[in-house]
Length: 218
Image (tube, rainbow, N blue to C red; front, side, top):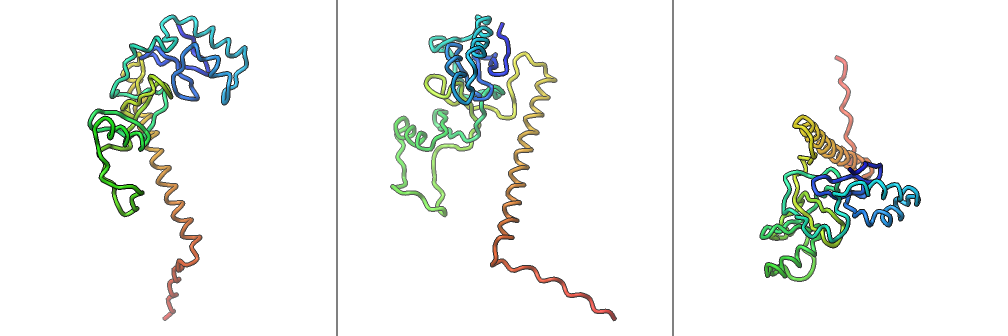
């Protein structure tokens, strides 16, 4: 059985380990290298303790050979708390391919779907809205940052996956995720108002409001 630590966590649904701070999966064979460099820089004894704890769980996927049969879903009705959650995904509406890079989605449409960009070279003006076939602002996650397993998949950002959790626990986590999203939107709105007020104060051309005339006594 895997022993939890302050550095790594088990993604139970797929039997992979994830770095708690980097928020992506790591093979047990790569733990020593990953935590031996920045930003972690764990001591040799700390890295040895990690490896000893991992060795006690025989069910873990330990290397690239073990993920050949790992299924990467085109979509997942939850999201993994252990992995980074991105909200800037770009999704192909023909096959479901997801990336976070505009050039990659253009290349994908051109090479896979024979798409031709109707716009010629040059950047579109701010007043021109580009008509593209893909969808943006897609919530997505990935298991690994590169190579196999780095494909992004669609997730539900309001429904965290909790292995073995009761209905009450899952409901609590869903409420917490919803509250966090609400707080995030409030912070963005507050920052916008602050920037707007600061801009008005710093603009010397903006005319100040005239004070109202005092009422004359009868």
